[in-house]
Figure 1 (spheres, rainbow, N blue to C red):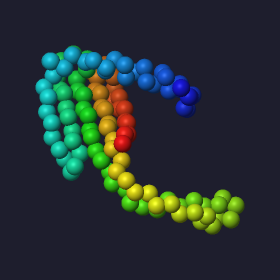
Figure 2: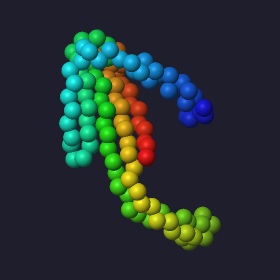
Figure 3: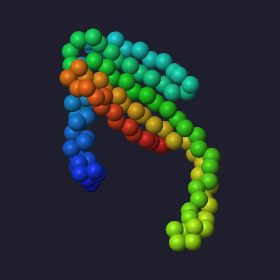
Figure 4: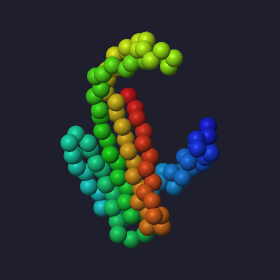
Length: 108
């Protein structure tokens, strides 16, 4: 794995290992869709892990990417970009942490 901003990506991934198999039986589950984004939530009011949310969204893209020559400032190529991009965003709230842990993936 590579290093970004002085932190090993392997170290960043280790942070999320604690959430691989959380005991969800003590959480209240809800599922809703808001403007095409599916939001699954697991919430409880005691314990360290208080909330898990998974947001699933698809974004359709139909645009043109332009490549510019740095020296001349002229556009050298235009490439059409079309397709659907699928994202999962995982959000973890812990009582012991002042910050939310967020993990974003894309697929398809």
